[in-house]
Amino acid sequence: MPQEEQVLVVERQVVEEVGIFHGLAFDVDRYLERLFAPGILRFMPRSEAETDPSFKQLIPYVIMSHRGKYLNYVRGKRAGETRLVAKRSIGIGGHINPVDDMPLFTADSYEPMYLNAVAREVAEEVCIEAGHTDKIVALLNDDSNEVGSVHLGVVHHWSLDTDEVTRKEQMITQMTFMTPAELNDVKDSLETWSQLCLPLLEG
Image (tube, rainbow, N blue to C red; front, side, top):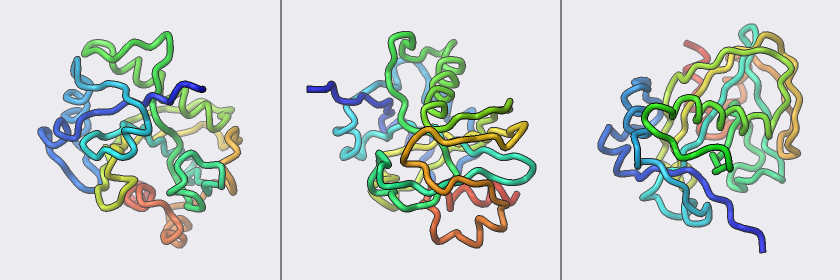
């Protein structure tokens, strides 16, 4: 029997202590300093995390752009999160899992450890033949639905040198680059997190 997936989580209470919010929070450093403090983050079985809103699964949500256009795709039937199938997304990323060479985060090393985990998660989903810059631009929370209530997004913006991106995961379909105006035209087809991030693209 395969071992169950372990995912990185933080107690909801910790987020509430910093300040619970809906949508985007831009005082990134204040949240990350607390979330990545020693002893705060831990791994737990995904089956438990998906049904226990007293924990938030930490999800890097990487938005990629090139010359004013943003990568987006439709989640196919093979998507790991079945509740998001057929929704268009502007975010690449996923759960952070333990690996042999990545110890739990500590106050003086969370940044390289976390960013390595983000790069690994992105590389599992797409192949990027381009250099890029990476900036954490917001945190994302949406407790209005059962998916959002057990997840906390860390929104990254990757500015790509070229648009040479190809899919690896079969669940990624109809991948293309679109302007903010074009994405706004299909807003109703976007998953909730992508809808919440639209103002970032238009700003």
